Amino acid sequence: MSVILSIEGLVKTFGGLIATDHVSLEVREGEIHALIGPNGAGKSTLINQLCGELVSDAGTIHLAGKEISGLKVPDRVALGLGRTFQITSLLDEMTVLENVGMAIQVREGHNFRILDLVSRRRTIWQEAEQRIADSGLSTRAGIRVADLSHGEKKQLELLVALAMKPRLLLLDEPMAGLGHVESQAMIGMLRETRKTAAMLLVEHDMEAVFALADRISVLVYGRVIASGTVDEIRNNPAVREAYLGA
Ligand code: ADP
Ligand code: MG
Image 1: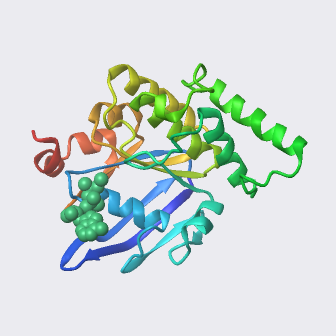
Image 2 (image 1 turned 135 degrees about the vertical axis):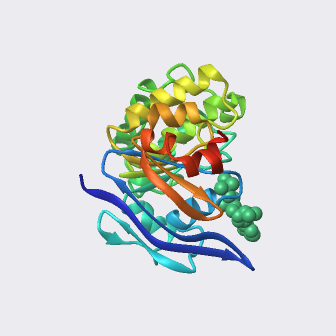
């Protein structure tokens, strides 16, 4: 299977602290690759290095064979990188439909305020409506973000990321703060997402990780201590000791 994301020797230091310490891993086309590890292990730092919000001290990143290590965030997005945030980044006073519509316009290279062609605009709103109808938010299109539940915001954030049509999606704790029903809805959305995008999934909810992941990498103190299939990671004594607590 071909590789969509290849990371080699990635390093990020904050003063004297090594947050990511020569991280190397590969995400294959079509897979959900989970990244697990204790708090402070460097997971969010790695996600921020991958999307270009943090400048790395060393190492290389290739997306679909192309080196993106030196590129700015929008250039990485244009090449097919998508992400969601640990804390949501939606426009609170706008509706679900407007948030998705805006993401589509950004993808199409439009300025949100200067919409020239009405026909063009119609296809954008139609696509936004379709994306919402196909999601767990089908009854919420006209609701302001501020009036959504936390779980609905997380779902919308995924929809907004998907509207950019990423080839690889970086997810930082999509299950955080979700109740059981909301978690199940999110798991369903991520299974659906797998049909169009590979994912690097940072997640603490091990039930979700075991339900979704094709492979897992374990990060401890900035280092990948193990990478493998779900069964390999579950049965790895070093992982059990360092992270799974058994
Ligand atoms: P995780 O997401 O695995 O919980 P983080 O990547 O957030 O871990 O953090 C890794 C380490 O880097 C932690 O020790 C954290 O305190 C530190 N760190 C993260 N971001 C910064 C920053 N902007 N400035 C200084 N230290 C940071
Ligand atoms: Mg984090």
